[in-house]
Length: 411
Image (cartoon, rainbow, N blue to C red):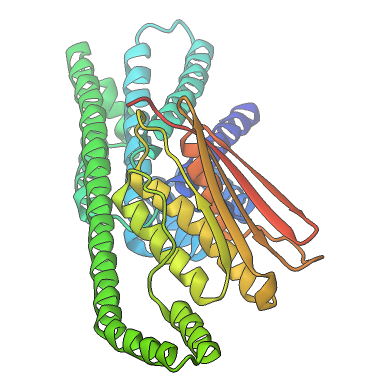
């Protein structure tokens, strides 16, 4: 292989590795990683070794490195890592198989090796574009967090990958002469089978995404039920004691001991488990989450204001909304905990215009405190990106504010 071709293949594979790295981060919910250059450097070195020494089975060497790198660099569990990696390498194998079949078909028509090299370069560029599009579609079916059943996607991907690579002999030194002996009908049959495999993979991805979403929604409903049961228990406990409290107040008033009665009533009001009214959002799990988070704020002595509305005719994922508001409120409560009790406050407002949902969260913060964007705000940015939205963050004069814009899909 000439030096220009080696450089071309190195650059082409570099683009592939960059696409793979971005897909891995998006599918697992990791927003940023400082190890992109290390990923590119090691994979490029592996590519050079394979090209220089024609190492058979180099694909599985790349798979092993990707598994090790993703585990050590992303700090995620295997159930979270394996499904997107399985999809990534299966799509790459399908693309490699189609490219190989196209080269085997064109070998009998190209007039010279130069034309063969140009055709191979064109296929490589087209393949990278196809891989970018396929990974972009695949990423939509992955939700952040651990999927309920990783094997439901992992096992079919492993079977398709091994079957394809074994049938075409992609990891053998003899795969080019072997494919060269096939007639046009054989190449066409293998190409159609490969395209059919891609269709089956996307069907599995769609089913996997729906199953994961339904499982998350069920978890949200269970959380709502548990919160409602806990709230009912608190109300029952308070109701059990309220008669005795009223008896004490009645006695104090009859004795005209008004200062003591006033102090007792104020203390009783502070100890009441009855939270402030929370506007109904139309999402049961989100309402339960808001009640729980604002109850936590009250436990920390944080004054709060909450005024929410959601688009009535649009479809917003309840899981994404819960994650968004939970991160906003957790950040606000955490920021207020280090302040003096009288300085603690937070507010949460949302308004709608058509299919646009505008959310504003503000809270008190220490003056001059350095700002560092943590995991919570990164999750907020990821959710906003899913709805073609934006996030703006401001911090000034002891006030921290996050503004989120979401474009909800029509109902």
